[in-house]
Image (cartoon, rainbow, N blue to C red; front, top):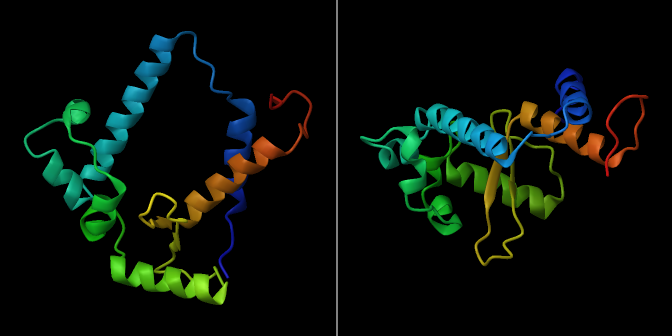
Amino acid sequence: MTTVDRRVLLRSFLRAKLEPAVFPSRAALLAWQERKVRAHLAWARTRSRHLEERFAGRSTAHWRSLPITNKAEMMARWDDVVTVPIRRDEALATALRAEEDRDFAPTVRGYTVGLSSGTSGNRGLFVASADERAEWAGSAIARVLPTLVPGLVPER
């Protein structure tokens, strides 16, 4: 059984409560989003053969000019898309076994793998690190619990 890093969970919880996403203008929001997308793509393209191919000869500033990768293509090219050392066949076998056994604790090299419902007609496969699981849990808890500490931002 994997454990959640309580420090990461608490940091995510507090960030969700203390740093509400408030921007002075739509332009400020769009500029923030653009910086985040470019930074993420710069990181991911060094770890994903698929992204490196797509950006060959281009900077990350040109991300909007690239054709959209749909879910079917992404699943077909899993081994070239993902940024962690987990092969599609291994992830899929682990996720299918977890679905069958209803035991979602097994991981692949420390990463949780799972399946989406496939409501679009293409069942998706996902992978999440321990820190990503803790970040999600902290953020989710912040959204569903009422304000526990005076002065924290309540949900509306």
